Length: 535
Image (cartoon, rainbow, N blue to C red; front, side, top):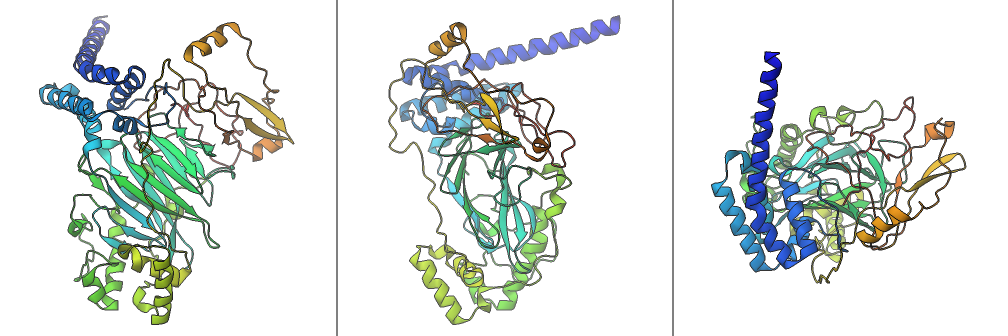
């Protein structure tokens, strides 16, 4: 009895302490919320609530306006004087806060100061060549899954899968990302499940996109057009993933934009983004580091003056010792896997069998490839990498893409009433030719008041016959994807529960309106999605 009373007392004290901390943070945050709602009562309230949710690593609220901006993008639409007042209030609270609230205020300061930070770009492309955030460039002929870029403090991580297409060359064939707590993967070749109609997976679920922005629960977005996925974090980071169709393997060119002045804990194949290329290849283990270690195998004057043998020794160091620093292991993998597979299924530490260089090419081959690259506008920094790809594998030149800002030229009209802007719900299912398909019903624009009246007074719209709970043979072979119909300006979806922060992929809990799931006897690994699609 005494023990029970003691436990209850401890729980009561902890609850009271947490409640008091929440009360203090909410009170101290009120001036920031006030600044935003004075700017725009509807968009400002959403942005303020989103910043608080991000500081707690929780799902953001539904968008109540027409734009499909992330919190960082909406913040760029806020006038500079308002942003300055917000940043000053956040910095003052960080200096005066208790230890319990320090992490939250660190997050708030990072978010509100982000528009003043100049971004930097890194890239992995071709077979593949990498350009670090600090300007170092190198060839990375390896096979396996690797951490391309990671920031533990910002819920930001990108992992790439490199697979061989010969004994000498490999390509980026898949990418998996932690987007502020949501797990996003792109698989243009081998799919991790039975869904072949789309390369995109969100928290384990197949998602078909067609000209529509997909809202991630924790505030990020996925946009798709012309074989290019643009994934944007709620804090502003961007990945441009170009899927290139090839006669060998379909592969992905990735361009990554980050904000180094807001966080200084980057690590991965794209370096630490500290402004110096000299330390991009530092490793914790000594390894068999070559005596001659240049900072770049492409575009570096010292490397170009080195002998071909020295360059190959350097490339061997990168593919062996440097690669081990950033190989993915099962405990930290973000990828989805087919039944019986894991990260070791895609690992070959003996690759490549031979290291190739531009110096191995004849002058005629080099000059022909150079002309092709110049005609397509490839920059001088990436010219040798382009020559390498075009001469050896006939990969078409691919200039570095421009990371577009969707807020450029945007004008925010007045919103009189909140209008829900969320992902289309899966409103019904239909059975056709013994195959289960998802049918998405997209409602037209309507205010929240209209939605409430319809929910109260109107009969539900007629849906097609539900599928029998006993799976057919066809169902055992077919796993449905989430299919988007033609987008409308405003749409409605039930509000999902807040997902947990990602450290490694986990099987999400099953929501009430989950898609039809293949039977347990299916040989394909099934990851039941959490409630995704929340704006």
